[in-house]
Length: 284
Ligand SMILES: [Mg+2]
Image (cartoon, rainbow, N blue to C red; front, top):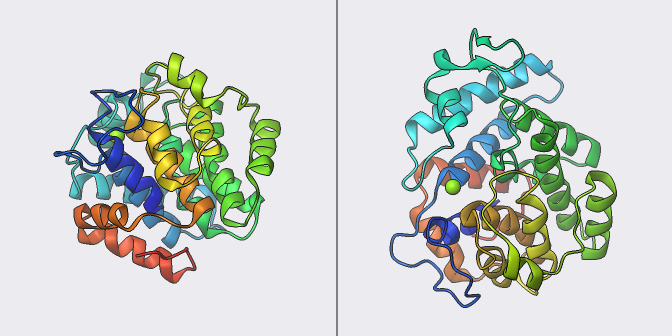
């Protein structure tokens, strides 16, 4: 989960000023966490307090209250929220129910396939003992807003990759599982992506590229460098890549850990501490 935060911070400056240089400056002046970290922490806070045996309405209600509370109390220092999610968060009275075309009676999912569901899911990959539960919780965490099949798929694919990586699966096994289960094309080379990839904020245009950046890397920092230097939605790509790379490599350079921890507010550092008590791999 800290890998997601580090990726987000590393990509924050490059989101709106893309680089194709693999040797870009890590953490240039102005680097900070963005909505990817804020929502990662919100989902983690929920997952740590959620009863997965409760009915889905109760789980969703708790998730909504935590997401809204975190967003209101910990503003994004950089960037902001996508338009649809911003309305869901701060102006639910303006939400249109996409199923009826009428004004919604409260917060409701808006059929999004944006990469927001995939960038906020990393804690779920760490907390459960089996893949079925992991995928089910990932679906719940996504569906509160991103209930389009691609939105759910993106969150589940990232969560599954983290679950497998932290349990010692090989890159070949992770690639095979993701390809078979979610039908993403992971056969493109990173070099091809580096030459051709352009901005895409959908799950289906972000998650496979983030996974390829991880699969083609040799270590955590290299994975982050690969995710950012293909261009596009850099903070979210690196957030997703970092979340998987952390689970796989376990080892994160100390300077990257220190940078992230120096920027995080107390509430988020507490969430990381609680994840540690639950058995989450603790590196700080
Ligand atoms: Mg962001």
